[in-house]
Image 1 (cartoon, rainbow, N blue to C red):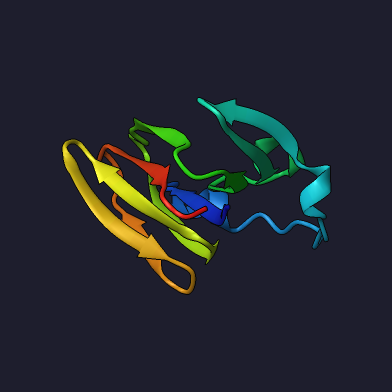
Image 2 (tube, rainbow, N blue to C red):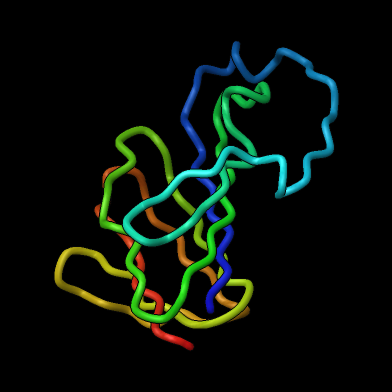
Length: 118
C-alpha cells in the first residue's frame, strides 16, 4: 500500500494573499472523498474550507492502482510519499518514488501515479 499527500498551489494576485483568515485544524477523516480510477483519496484542504490557492489531498491505494494522468493548468503540484512506492508518470515516462521522497510538478505538466509496492 502507498500513502501520498499532494498539494497544488494556485497562483493569485497579491491582493488575495492579504486577507486574514482564522487558523483551522482539520482531520484527514473530515476530507471529501473522491476516486481517481481505483485510487481512493480525500480532499482535505480546498476552497470549501476557505483555501484560495492551495489544495491538499491524502490518497492511498494498493499495488497496481493508478491515479490517472492529469494536468493542473494554474497550479503546481507537490507529491509527498509517506509510505510505500509508486511510479510517477509523465506521459510515457515513469520515475520511481518511495517513502521519504517528494516530487514537484510544475503547472501545465501532465502527471499521475501507479502504485508499485504491495
